[in-house]
Image 1 (cartoon, rainbow, N blue to C red):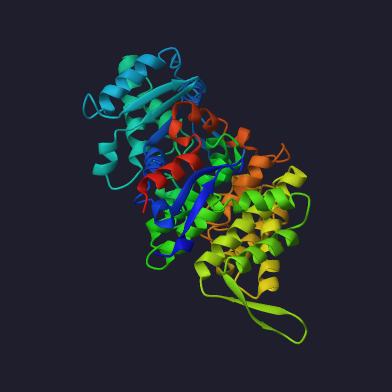
Image 2: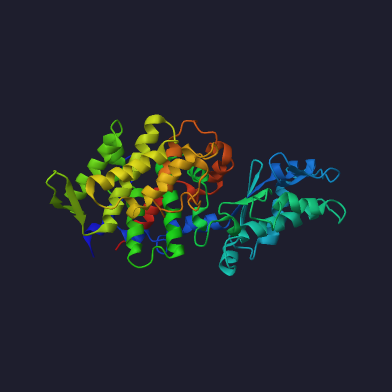
Length: 444
């Protein structure tokens, strides 16, 4: 076993949390903390009781058909005190959803939200994760009908529409009161990318705006999608796991030290530091020096070089967003870091150049194309950002954590309810340390 494949993981204070970790211990097939995070995301639904009650009372169901063309059905209003009956409705739902008295079905009332986790056996029995949407939504409709003794002419059709929106028309947002953390299959851009569907702002909210925790969570989702889609098969398993370790989990304390040492410097200083580290550690070597003085490097370990380069990419994103207290420049920082790194070393940039191409389009759509293209609203499976699997979204997430309110679409606007999930889903707290400790338990 190659000793270079082992490393120590550090937290956001530069303190060691797990030592002598082998990259394979970070595989989603082996790491219990990663599996718990993914499992939690797949079986969790969020029901906005306030939205449900309000939409029924006004007859506004089915979301908008076009801007300014809200679906409001006059004369079909249904006035039900749903929030007052939340506890009773939740208990009715629990009885319908549970498979056994001792299973892990969970319902928690959090202000005006009802957090539902379907039993794990349902995920194991079903074909995919949309049960987390369909089963709580259906149980909620039954529970409301039973709770208020509604008959066929008492607005039960409106109840269904208020809960599920325009289901099964799911190409556009359904507008119902029920949502999940992973997008519906008909929303997403292709197969094997469901873990990449949470938006940047949603991941920021899930991590409570803690930069390294948000990066860790984002990196887990991105690379879990690589495993699901087949992108991490064969030699690419090590490629993705090393990338997740160094960029997503601060292996060797590299990201922390790059930010600490060059917080008041430039992207070029980070590039020079990454190159010097790779030379010192034997990851790259000088291949030849041209008459002009230009030095060309080569590597015997492209996966490890990519891991080092991706750590530098994140450091450049943090440096840029931290200095400006704004996320808007992070696509440009990623673009020019990737371009300058390739020019400085003659080696492939992050993700064999895919990070550069992705950042270039990302920069154009967040700066030039239209006003709605802000960093926080993109997701990993979006056509703009899907080109680089694993290495772009963690940087965008870090930038949004550091943004000081410069964006129109802040996490507190687009994902305000998601912040509350941390109160009832402890698995989302301190993901970096939890993943590292789980990896340390695996040992060799």
